[in-house]
Amino acid sequence: MNFVPVRPPRLMSQYLGEAERAVARLFETARATAPTLLFFDELDALAPRRSGKDAVLDRIVAQLLTEIDGCAGRDGVVLLAATNRAASIDPALTRPGRFDTVIPLGLPDRAARASILRVHLANRPLAADLDIDRLAGASDGASGADLAALVAEAARLALVRIVETEAPADSGITMADAEAAIEWLRIAKAARSTDFISPTQGGDA
Image 1: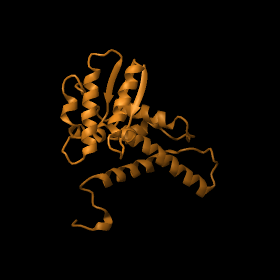
Image 2: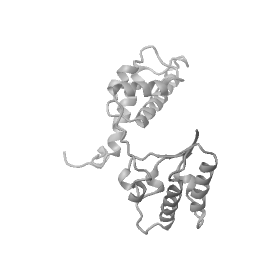
Image 3: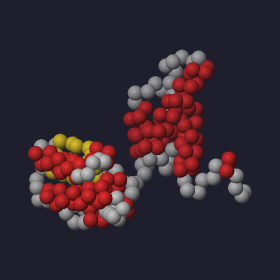
Image 4: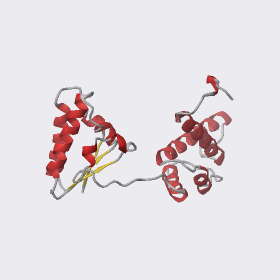
């Protein structure tokens, strides 16, 4: 099966009518190359609730509805979408015959976090003391994206340490680097929270 990932910037256009034509061409190609799976990432950005305030997005939603209905009953074209803001999607897209099967995906458990960490650490030099299972246990509540960011930060910290201490270049990511990255992730997530108050902002104790 052909797999076609679709991101909002690929279809958005500043020119009148171009975005709708891009949607039409996308579905035309999917039908011509069937079996095809069309995967719409961040569907909420491409097809938000229509309000009349953004004519381009409203027209894209209308074109999507037309093309999806045109695919109804056709063998070989499968539609799949992902979003972390399901309530923002235009309700017409989730009616029967469209994106009508919703599968909630929760945060990964400890075993899943360990597997995700192993994927992101696979091609990086690791110190002997790095315990992935322990790291998975210490990262409770982290999403897959959080874990990818955690590994990237741990690698950055390891590089800084190697440069500053003139350690061997292949000494790798240590458990201390990973634990510091976990603390960085905790602070970063708190900063994104609506009730976070920066120490520089003051506030009542």
